[in-house]
Length: 168
Ligand code: S3P
Image: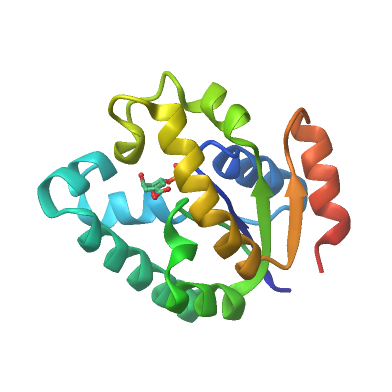
């Protein structure tokens, strides 16, 4: 059995879908953000503030390298920026079947507008930030994905059903 990997923008539902999918498929779930926080013993916003984004990005690559060695049939949800590195996209491909949870900027904004844990969306105009980043990232998400799941306007049950029929 291959790993099921969930990629997509912040707020696209990776963590919640990962958790629910793990119950449904009876597989364990891993979240790269949580792995990094556990290993670093601090929160992502603190890592960004103290070490900068480049340091965090290196931790993401190291996390994938570790997962390659250790896993086989899990659900893995990854941070929204992780698939931007070419090396990471190659690692994701080796790691399993990649699902892109695709959402529009409007859906994302609604989900993250009251959230303070995502350093990249802090600041003056979060909607503008989301639109710009999403436009920049969408081609990389598509390049990394085996399957694209559109999540706008859908409940979790529907999203899970759509993923389940595609799982190899
Ligand atoms: C980031 C997404 C976050 C987290 C970090 C950076 C990004 O993960 O890795 O704040 O660059 O999109 P989620 O996608 O789980 O929010």
